[in-house]
Amino acid sequence: MASSTESLWKTLYAFSKSKSFPEDFMRASVYISQIPSDSIFWKNLMCVKYFIIDGEEQRRLELDPSTKDVHLGKYILFGTEIRGC
Image (cartoon, rainbow, N blue to C red; front, side, top):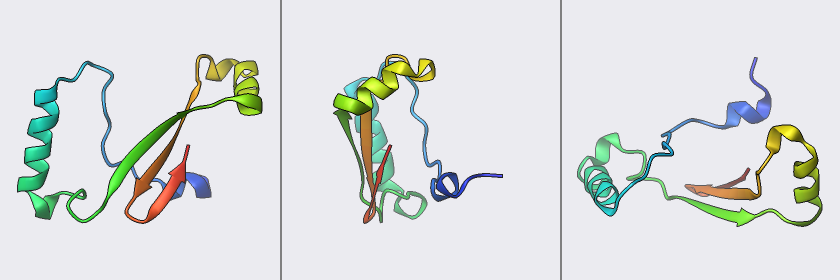
């Protein structure tokens, strides 16, 4: 059973770690703008802001072996809702 926090999240797209080129972003942008009825991005503002975790939170993460090398956090704006990770 998913926790109440997990149930609030909806996977929309997954991005691979493979290298992307400017042409990839241009084509994706054109596709999204040309297919408004099928795109969640047409009616929703979505952006991600990454930030460096520092201070006490970074020390806590460094002590947890499952979070080795994690030094970034992020905020996601989807529509009018801000979510922190």
